[in-house]
Image (cartoon, rainbow, N blue to C red; front, side):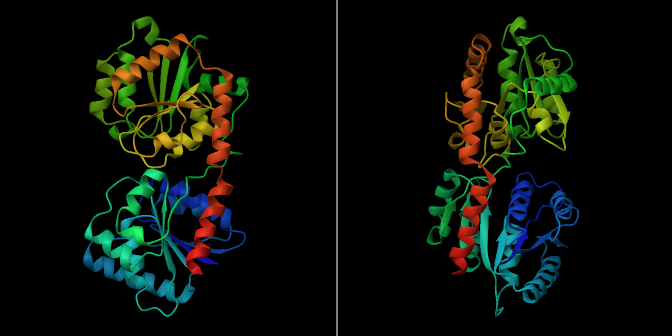
Length: 368
Protein backbone atom coordinates (compact mmCIF):
# COMPACT_ATOMS: atom_id res chain seq x y z
CA UNK A 1 0.00 0.00 0.00
CA UNK A 2 1.19 3.53 -0.80
CA UNK A 3 0.48 5.89 2.09
CA UNK A 4 0.81 9.67 2.34
CA UNK A 5 0.89 11.26 5.79
CA UNK A 6 0.31 15.00 6.15
CA UNK A 7 0.49 17.53 8.95
CA UNK A 8 0.27 21.32 8.83
CA UNK A 9 2.28 22.44 11.90
CA UNK A 10 5.31 24.52 10.84
CA UNK A 11 7.27 23.95 14.09
CA UNK A 12 6.26 21.88 17.10
CA UNK A 13 3.26 19.68 16.51
CA UNK A 14 2.29 18.44 19.95
CA UNK A 15 0.87 14.93 19.85
CA UNK A 16 0.68 14.92 16.04
CA UNK A 17 4.42 14.21 15.72
CA UNK A 18 4.60 11.04 17.85
CA UNK A 19 1.28 9.87 16.40
CA UNK A 20 2.51 10.03 12.80
CA UNK A 21 6.03 8.83 13.59
CA UNK A 22 4.70 5.78 15.43
CA UNK A 23 2.49 4.86 12.46
CA UNK A 24 5.33 5.38 9.99
CA UNK A 25 7.63 3.12 12.00
CA UNK A 26 4.92 0.49 12.26
CA UNK A 27 4.32 0.40 8.49
CA UNK A 28 7.68 1.29 6.95
CA UNK A 29 8.79 -2.30 6.25
CA UNK A 30 5.68 -3.41 4.36
CA UNK A 31 4.36 -0.24 2.75
CA UNK A 32 5.64 2.73 0.74
CA UNK A 33 5.39 5.90 2.80
CA UNK A 34 5.73 9.60 2.04
CA UNK A 35 5.37 12.43 4.55
CA UNK A 36 4.28 15.90 3.37
CA UNK A 37 4.78 18.49 6.11
CA UNK A 38 6.63 21.80 6.56
CA UNK A 39 10.39 21.34 6.45
CA UNK A 40 10.74 23.54 9.52
CA UNK A 41 8.71 21.17 11.70
CA UNK A 42 9.86 18.77 14.39
CA UNK A 43 7.93 16.03 12.59
CA UNK A 44 9.93 16.56 9.37
CA UNK A 45 13.23 16.30 11.31
CA UNK A 46 12.14 13.10 13.07
CA UNK A 47 10.82 11.41 9.92
CA UNK A 48 14.00 12.11 7.95
CA UNK A 49 15.84 9.81 10.34
CA UNK A 50 13.66 6.82 9.41
CA UNK A 51 15.16 4.74 6.57
CA UNK A 52 13.08 4.38 3.44
CA UNK A 53 10.66 7.21 4.25
CA UNK A 54 10.56 10.13 1.82
CA UNK A 55 9.85 13.56 3.29
CA UNK A 56 8.45 16.39 1.16
CA UNK A 57 8.59 19.98 2.40
CA UNK A 58 5.02 21.26 2.02
CA UNK A 59 3.43 24.32 3.61
CA UNK A 60 -0.30 24.54 4.28
CA UNK A 61 -1.14 28.22 4.03
CA UNK A 62 -4.54 29.75 4.81
CA UNK A 63 -3.91 32.64 2.38
CA UNK A 64 -5.55 32.16 -1.00
CA UNK A 65 -2.70 32.57 -3.49
CA UNK A 66 -0.05 30.63 -1.56
CA UNK A 67 -2.65 27.95 -0.87
CA UNK A 68 -3.43 27.58 -4.59
CA UNK A 69 0.27 27.18 -5.44
CA UNK A 70 0.72 24.62 -2.65
CA UNK A 71 -2.37 22.73 -3.79
CA UNK A 72 -1.04 22.51 -7.36
CA UNK A 73 2.19 21.07 -6.02
CA UNK A 74 0.30 18.54 -3.92
CA UNK A 75 -1.78 17.59 -6.96
CA UNK A 76 1.40 16.78 -8.90
CA UNK A 77 2.58 14.66 -5.97
CA UNK A 78 -0.72 12.75 -5.84
CA UNK A 79 -0.74 12.21 -9.60
CA UNK A 80 2.86 10.96 -9.73
CA UNK A 81 2.82 8.79 -6.60
CA UNK A 82 -0.71 7.33 -6.98
CA UNK A 83 -1.25 6.92 -3.24
CA UNK A 84 -3.89 4.55 -1.94
CA UNK A 85 -4.33 6.44 1.35
CA UNK A 86 -3.79 10.06 2.36
CA UNK A 87 -3.89 10.24 6.17
CA UNK A 88 -4.47 13.86 7.22
CA UNK A 89 -4.24 15.25 10.74
CA UNK A 90 -5.58 18.82 10.70
CA UNK A 91 -8.01 21.12 8.92
CA UNK A 92 -5.44 22.91 6.71
CA UNK A 93 -3.79 19.78 5.30
CA UNK A 94 -7.19 18.06 5.07
CA UNK A 95 -8.57 20.91 2.95
CA UNK A 96 -5.63 21.01 0.57
CA UNK A 97 -5.47 17.26 0.03
CA UNK A 98 -9.21 17.33 -0.68
CA UNK A 99 -8.72 20.06 -3.31
CA UNK A 100 -5.58 18.47 -4.75
CA UNK A 101 -7.23 15.12 -5.50
CA UNK A 102 -10.28 16.57 -7.33
CA UNK A 103 -10.67 14.96 -10.75
CA UNK A 104 -7.69 12.63 -10.47
CA UNK A 105 -8.18 9.25 -12.12
CA UNK A 106 -6.39 7.58 -9.21
CA UNK A 107 -7.31 9.63 -6.14
CA UNK A 108 -6.22 8.50 -2.68
CA UNK A 109 -8.84 7.69 -0.09
CA UNK A 110 -8.65 10.23 2.74
CA UNK A 111 -8.51 9.26 6.42
CA UNK A 112 -8.70 12.06 8.98
CA UNK A 113 -7.65 11.71 12.61
CA UNK A 114 -9.28 14.19 14.98
CA UNK A 115 -6.80 14.91 17.77
CA UNK A 116 -8.75 17.50 19.78
CA UNK A 117 -12.19 18.17 21.24
CA UNK A 118 -13.02 21.30 19.22
CA UNK A 119 -16.49 21.44 17.58
CA UNK A 120 -16.89 20.01 14.07
CA UNK A 121 -19.99 21.93 13.05
CA UNK A 122 -18.38 24.55 10.78
CA UNK A 123 -19.14 24.82 7.06
CA UNK A 124 -15.58 23.72 6.31
CA UNK A 125 -16.11 20.52 8.27
CA UNK A 126 -19.41 19.87 6.48
CA UNK A 127 -17.71 20.23 3.08
CA UNK A 128 -14.73 18.07 4.06
CA UNK A 129 -17.04 15.40 5.49
CA UNK A 130 -19.06 15.22 2.26
CA UNK A 131 -16.33 15.73 -0.35
CA UNK A 132 -12.99 14.93 1.21
CA UNK A 133 -13.16 12.05 3.68
CA UNK A 134 -13.70 8.31 3.50
CA UNK A 135 -12.79 7.36 7.06
CA UNK A 136 -12.40 9.09 10.42
CA UNK A 137 -10.42 8.23 13.54
CA UNK A 138 -11.23 9.58 16.98
CA UNK A 139 -8.43 9.16 19.51
CA UNK A 140 -10.97 8.56 22.28
CA UNK A 141 -14.67 7.75 22.63
CA UNK A 142 -15.42 11.36 23.59
CA UNK A 143 -14.10 12.56 20.22
CA UNK A 144 -15.79 9.73 18.32
CA UNK A 145 -19.14 10.74 19.80
CA UNK A 146 -18.54 14.29 18.58
CA UNK A 147 -17.82 12.96 15.10
CA UNK A 148 -20.82 10.64 15.02
CA UNK A 149 -23.11 13.54 15.94
CA UNK A 150 -21.73 15.68 13.08
CA UNK A 151 -21.59 15.51 9.29
CA UNK A 152 -18.86 12.88 9.67
CA UNK A 153 -21.40 10.50 11.18
CA UNK A 154 -22.27 9.16 7.73
CA UNK A 155 -18.71 7.78 7.41
CA UNK A 156 -16.90 4.95 9.19
CA UNK A 157 -15.90 6.49 12.56
CA UNK A 158 -13.42 4.40 14.55
CA UNK A 159 -12.05 4.99 18.02
CA UNK A 160 -8.36 4.09 17.88
CA UNK A 161 -6.51 5.14 21.00
CA UNK A 162 -3.01 6.56 20.88
CA UNK A 163 -0.31 3.93 20.83
CA UNK A 164 3.00 4.16 22.66
CA UNK A 165 6.11 2.01 22.50
CA UNK A 166 5.72 0.10 25.75
CA UNK A 167 9.20 -1.40 25.35
CA UNK A 168 10.63 2.12 25.28
CA UNK A 169 8.38 3.52 28.01
CA UNK A 170 8.70 1.01 30.83
CA UNK A 171 9.37 1.08 34.57
CA UNK A 172 12.96 1.52 35.67
CA UNK A 173 14.67 -0.16 38.58
CA UNK A 174 14.48 1.67 41.95
CA UNK A 175 18.16 2.58 41.70
CA UNK A 176 17.77 4.04 38.18
CA UNK A 177 14.69 6.00 39.30
CA UNK A 178 16.60 7.37 42.31
CA UNK A 179 19.46 8.42 40.02
CA UNK A 180 17.05 10.25 37.68
CA UNK A 181 15.54 12.00 40.70
CA UNK A 182 18.96 13.17 41.91
CA UNK A 183 19.91 14.47 38.47
CA UNK A 184 16.77 16.62 38.16
CA UNK A 185 16.00 17.52 41.77
CA UNK A 186 19.14 16.97 43.79
CA UNK A 187 19.22 15.04 47.05
CA UNK A 188 15.76 14.73 48.59
CA UNK A 189 14.52 13.31 51.90
CA UNK A 190 13.02 9.83 51.63
CA UNK A 191 9.50 11.06 52.42
CA UNK A 192 9.33 13.54 49.49
CA UNK A 193 6.69 12.69 46.89
CA UNK A 194 7.55 13.66 43.29
CA UNK A 195 4.63 14.30 40.92
CA UNK A 196 5.49 14.79 37.28
CA UNK A 197 4.01 15.67 33.90
CA UNK A 198 5.36 15.84 30.36
CA UNK A 199 2.08 17.25 29.05
CA UNK A 200 3.28 20.84 28.63
CA UNK A 201 3.05 24.13 30.49
CA UNK A 202 0.22 25.99 28.76
CA UNK A 203 -2.55 27.28 31.02
CA UNK A 204 -5.05 24.80 29.55
CA UNK A 205 -2.84 21.90 30.66
CA UNK A 206 -4.12 22.58 34.18
CA UNK A 207 -0.87 22.18 36.14
CA UNK A 208 -1.42 25.54 37.84
CA UNK A 209 -4.42 24.05 39.67
CA UNK A 210 -2.12 21.48 41.25
CA UNK A 211 0.25 24.26 42.29
CA UNK A 212 -2.63 26.22 43.84
CA UNK A 213 -3.84 23.13 45.68
CA UNK A 214 -0.37 22.34 47.01
CA UNK A 215 0.04 25.95 48.18
CA UNK A 216 -2.85 25.39 50.60
CA UNK A 217 -0.94 22.68 52.47
CA UNK A 218 0.84 23.49 55.73
CA UNK A 219 4.49 24.32 55.15
CA UNK A 220 5.77 20.99 56.46
CA UNK A 221 3.52 19.00 54.11
CA UNK A 222 4.20 21.30 51.19
CA UNK A 223 7.92 20.65 51.47
CA UNK A 224 7.23 16.93 51.16
CA UNK A 225 6.20 17.56 47.53
CA UNK A 226 8.06 18.28 44.31
CA UNK A 227 6.17 19.11 41.12
CA UNK A 228 8.19 18.35 38.00
CA UNK A 229 6.60 19.91 34.89
CA UNK A 230 8.33 19.53 31.51
CA UNK A 231 7.74 21.75 28.48
CA UNK A 232 8.41 25.31 27.42
CA UNK A 233 9.00 27.77 30.24
CA UNK A 234 5.52 28.88 31.39
CA UNK A 235 4.24 32.39 30.57
CA UNK A 236 5.52 35.14 32.91
CA UNK A 237 2.15 35.62 34.64
CA UNK A 238 2.00 31.96 35.63
CA UNK A 239 5.62 31.96 36.83
CA UNK A 240 4.86 35.01 38.95
CA UNK A 241 1.86 33.23 40.45
CA UNK A 242 4.01 30.22 41.35
CA UNK A 243 6.42 32.49 43.22
CA UNK A 244 3.62 34.50 44.86
CA UNK A 245 2.11 31.27 46.20
CA UNK A 246 5.43 30.35 47.78
CA UNK A 247 5.78 27.36 45.48
CA UNK A 248 9.04 28.33 43.77
CA UNK A 249 11.08 25.78 45.73
CA UNK A 250 8.54 23.02 45.17
CA UNK A 251 7.79 23.48 41.45
CA UNK A 252 10.54 22.62 38.97
CA UNK A 253 10.47 23.34 35.22
CA UNK A 254 13.19 21.29 33.46
CA UNK A 255 12.23 22.75 30.05
CA UNK A 256 11.83 20.81 26.84
CA UNK A 257 13.30 17.33 27.11
CA UNK A 258 14.36 15.16 24.19
CA UNK A 259 13.28 12.01 26.01
CA UNK A 260 10.21 12.22 28.32
CA UNK A 261 11.44 9.13 30.17
CA UNK A 262 14.09 11.25 31.87
CA UNK A 263 11.36 13.24 33.66
CA UNK A 264 8.92 10.40 34.26
CA UNK A 265 11.65 8.17 35.69
CA UNK A 266 12.22 10.72 38.47
CA UNK A 267 8.56 10.64 39.57
CA UNK A 268 6.50 8.57 41.96
CA UNK A 269 3.24 9.56 40.23
CA UNK A 270 2.16 11.33 37.06
CA UNK A 271 -0.50 13.94 36.44
CA UNK A 272 -2.36 15.47 33.49
CA UNK A 273 -4.97 17.98 34.67
CA UNK A 274 -5.98 19.54 31.35
CA UNK A 275 -9.05 21.69 30.88
CA UNK A 276 -9.47 20.24 27.36
CA UNK A 277 -7.92 16.97 26.16
CA UNK A 278 -8.69 14.20 23.69
CA UNK A 279 -6.10 11.44 23.75
CA UNK A 280 -3.06 12.21 25.88
CA UNK A 281 0.40 10.88 25.13
CA UNK A 282 1.56 12.29 28.46
CA UNK A 283 -0.96 10.09 30.29
CA UNK A 284 -0.23 6.98 28.22
CA UNK A 285 3.53 7.38 28.68
CA UNK A 286 3.12 7.96 32.42
CA UNK A 287 1.07 4.78 32.82
CA UNK A 288 3.50 2.82 30.64
CA UNK A 289 6.32 3.86 32.98
CA UNK A 290 4.36 2.31 35.84
CA UNK A 291 3.28 5.63 37.36
CA UNK A 292 -0.19 5.85 38.89
CA UNK A 293 -1.57 8.98 37.25
CA UNK A 294 -3.90 11.76 38.36
CA UNK A 295 -6.05 13.13 35.53
CA UNK A 296 -8.91 15.57 35.17
CA UNK A 297 -12.31 14.55 33.85
CA UNK A 298 -11.82 16.61 30.66
CA UNK A 299 -12.56 15.02 27.28
CA UNK A 300 -11.04 11.59 26.86
CA UNK A 301 -8.82 11.58 29.97
CA UNK A 302 -11.26 9.58 32.17
CA UNK A 303 -11.18 6.85 29.52
CA UNK A 304 -7.47 6.32 30.11
CA UNK A 305 -7.35 6.00 33.90
CA UNK A 306 -9.55 3.86 36.12
CA UNK A 307 -10.21 5.81 39.30
CA UNK A 308 -8.66 4.11 42.31
CA UNK A 309 -7.23 1.27 40.21
CA UNK A 310 -4.32 2.68 38.21
CA UNK A 311 -4.77 6.36 38.99
CA UNK A 312 -7.35 8.94 39.98
CA UNK A 313 -9.83 11.27 38.26
CA UNK A 314 -10.74 14.73 39.62
CA UNK A 315 -13.03 17.44 38.18
CA UNK A 316 -11.14 19.73 35.78
CA UNK A 317 -9.98 22.94 37.45
CA UNK A 318 -11.23 21.87 40.90
CA UNK A 319 -8.56 23.04 43.35
CA UNK A 320 -10.55 21.76 46.36
CA UNK A 321 -10.66 18.22 44.95
CA UNK A 322 -6.95 18.26 44.11
CA UNK A 323 -6.14 19.56 47.61
CA UNK A 324 -8.12 16.72 49.19
CA UNK A 325 -6.33 14.23 46.93
CA UNK A 326 -2.91 15.62 47.98
CA UNK A 327 -3.78 15.24 51.67
CA UNK A 328 -4.79 11.64 51.08
CA UNK A 329 -1.62 10.82 49.11
CA UNK A 330 0.68 12.37 51.71
CA UNK A 331 -1.00 10.33 54.43
CA UNK A 332 -1.20 7.06 52.51
CA UNK A 333 1.59 6.23 50.03
CA UNK A 334 0.55 4.40 46.87
CA UNK A 335 0.82 0.63 47.00
CA UNK A 336 3.01 -1.30 44.53
CA UNK A 337 -0.17 -2.96 43.22
CA UNK A 338 -1.44 0.39 41.89
CA UNK A 339 1.85 1.00 40.07
CA UNK A 340 1.69 -2.49 38.58
CA UNK A 341 -1.90 -1.85 37.51
CA UNK A 342 -0.81 1.35 35.74
CA UNK A 343 1.73 -0.59 33.68
CA UNK A 344 -0.77 -3.35 32.86
CA UNK A 345 -3.30 -0.73 31.78
CA UNK A 346 -0.81 0.67 29.27
CA UNK A 347 0.05 -2.77 27.93
CA UNK A 348 -3.62 -3.64 27.49
CA UNK A 349 -4.88 -0.37 25.98
CA UNK A 350 -2.05 1.73 24.53
CA UNK A 351 0.48 -0.68 23.04
CA UNK A 352 1.50 0.48 19.57
CA UNK A 353 1.01 -2.84 17.70
CA UNK A 354 -2.71 -2.82 18.51
CA UNK A 355 -3.11 0.81 17.41
CA UNK A 356 -1.23 0.14 14.17
CA UNK A 357 -3.22 -3.01 13.41
CA UNK A 358 -6.54 -1.22 13.85
CA UNK A 359 -5.38 1.74 11.74
CA UNK A 360 -4.29 -0.54 8.89
CA UNK A 361 -7.62 -2.37 9.12
CA UNK A 362 -9.39 0.96 8.54
CA UNK A 363 -7.14 1.73 5.55
CA UNK A 364 -8.02 -1.61 3.98
CA UNK A 365 -11.71 -1.20 4.74
CA UNK A 366 -12.05 2.12 2.94
CA UNK A 367 -9.83 1.04 0.05
CA UNK A 368 -12.08 -1.97 -0.45
